[in-house]
Length: 217
Image 1 (cartoon, rainbow, N blue to C red):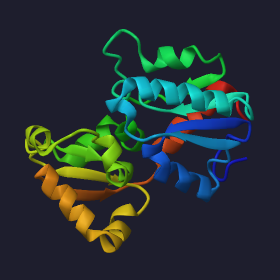
Image 2 (image 1 turned 90 degrees about the horizontal axis):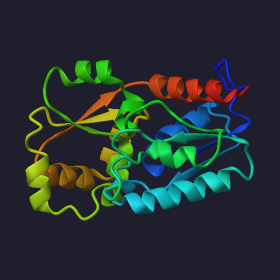
Image 3 (image 1 turned 60 degrees about the horizontal axis):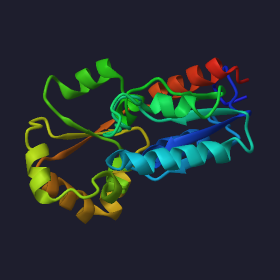
């Protein structure tokens, strides 16, 4: 049984976007996420939906070799947009992989750490660009093929800056070990990076609900 949880993930495998790896590793280390295994796709594949689908299907297939129940940690609204078939969603892709494969009920990775109400409170009514630690660690994947021109069009309109949802004590350590990367990233965006600490309660709840739907534990 997962520590501090009313459900066990022992008979589940987790397939997740690598962007969420810092948070999922923290939950595994804490004993909450006692899954049979966690498999990651390459971070930031929303920029390449064909690669995202290919990697997701491959990882689900691999997970099915050691677990009958699979939890997919991907958002439902922004992570996968098929330009050739806009009506095809990530849930369609997942449904094709079998009956015992469920996705967490969130719109994107930011929503997995803070729901709409929490984000409204954290933003203070300002327009902000949301970040997670994975967006900084895997910046080259997340912002694949972005040049400074696209950055200038996208980021400065966020007058409240870039708010980092930090549930794993990432910012302090990373700022000490790689201060130049934080400064360069902030300069590239043209807005400050503002860390906001929070807990992993939201992600825990989403994972727990998904496991219960699968009949885990």
